[in-house]
Length: 144
Image (cartoon, rainbow, N blue to C red; front, top):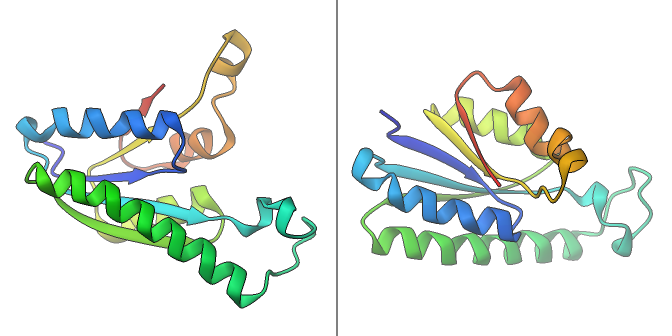
């Protein structure tokens, strides 16, 4: 049914919960998981003004390398359970890159976590998750 899953993560607690769901789907035929993190340098004001300016190469490299190491830890846990993985780190606008990767890898499901603490926050899921849900051509499993 869902043989290839795309798991985009921002390494937050809701994202960590997705791992449990992925492991539970192993018995349902999951064969491969694409672990994805999109480095969105536009949203990191502590590293420079959010005016569309670019960060220096060392800063970009540090963010990309850190993200890759975190994804590799998740991949290790999944592979230990017999699920093949592929780690993908991209730079760009998160929802656009997530949808591009989903198309490119021909995944059958996107599993994404989100934070929601109250009624109003549940109405407005979060910009990345909301855009992925709205624009995706494949099923999206949203985990709170």
